[in-house]
Amino acid sequence: MIGVAGNPTTTVASPRLMHSRLNALHTSMTNNSLCQVSKYDHITSTLRDDLHWLPIRQRIMYKLSTIVYKCIHGAAPSYLTLILSLLTQVVVIFAQQHTETY
Image (tube, rainbow, N blue to C red):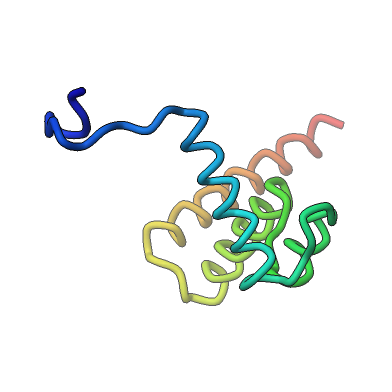
């Protein structure tokens, strides 16, 4: 059997075998080193509390907030500060035009 990189001595494991190996690795990592949770515990609170991981929407909002904060306080790269200032100007112009019509 031809295996990885054409080496005939190396065989490729079946997807089922790879899945079982990854599952065993995941179980041993979870139980032994990371958080001391059992196999049947809910992992959401562990990820949030112990590992400080956020759900995707909250992570996006956190990253955007951090970038805006850095732009305002001069800690961001200049191209980001420029983009933020341009967007601020557009919002101000839009707000002025919107209040004039009503």
